[in-house]
Length: 226
Image (cartoon, rainbow, N blue to C red; front, top):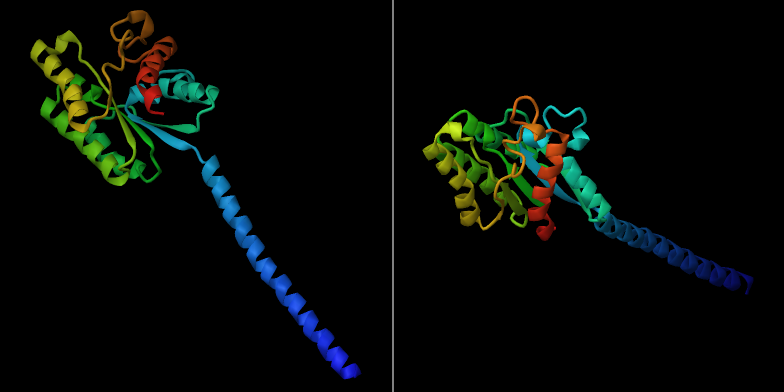
């Protein structure tokens, strides 16, 4: 009788242990799943500014004064779940950007702001080459991140480059915007280009005050797609 009782008690104990072990396997899985879901919810989307010295904030004593950084500050003040990545490289041409973009696209991109072409224009590079490179960059972004929103920052050349060249150069941006159905910033340096007090001594790169105006120009086009 005692043996039967002991056997029964042992059987019950085994069932209890099995049940406990089963719970232990389930709970971590559910906890892990919840943790992953929470991480996804907390993850911020990425806005990549891909450009040249204008984006990089060339000549500023503090990089946080660049229009890209000022855009991040505004986003933070509004509580939007976006982080800005400054992909500006001084001296970058559209050809250089086309070679570099594959590397920078290794990170997730939700909004791609393309700011290139200025150095092409100042060097008198054929407009057809600039247009081809800009389109190639956009094609690479669309191929890897088809859901990414695209923004193109338009640029213009000074009259000294000649009427024909300046007109064709300006039209590159409107043509690409129409072809790709993307958001166009008509002229990135609107209200800043040609204004001595808003530019550094080289007359090309904006001062900190100039970047504030550029940031406002960018935001007018960017806010509606965030």
